[in-house]
Image 1 (spheres, one colour):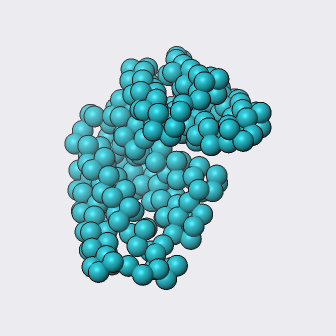
Image 2 (cartoon, rainbow, N blue to C red; image 1 turned 60 degrees about the horizontal axis):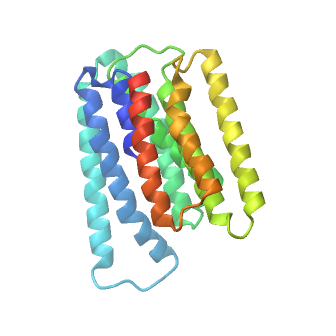
Length: 246
């Protein structure tokens, strides 16, 4: 999922200069830092005993990842056109703020909250316009279109996974909630398209997404591994189609 907004960021014009290409490694390094630091912080907050050397490893690797991410991002800022740096930094700041909110919520044990997950997904979605800004693309109605498409896909996946978790015990309620969520996402995307933020054929990218949802609700996968395998194909299809459309 982390790669999807980056692929669409390149598709919207982010491949035109060197600066946008530095955003994916910086983002990946932040992601690695999150997975190094958050489990340690959770364990520390809960006062759970740690294996020998656990704290040192987590802090050293997490700090190293963050330092490397800062260095790579600084190179991206320097590589961007001077006129584009302000907007680039503004989007990066918004994404970083959302990442911090998600990390703090995860440390406090609220990482699975719907609101927190949506905020985290919104932060990831901003990688696409961040790359477009680094490339110096002008701000217009379609500037955040890739982010809207990515967030729509993320929300669909979230709704489907949450429904899958409830299907065996509350099948009717799970299906109803999933359908309502997808209708809400469709309405929001249609409104964005009407405003001019999305390309004309944007909805084609969601054909495999809708197919996954219908198929998954009618014939649920046998286990979470199968859910992941199906989602991998859906993510690949969505990314390829959306990139072609953009």
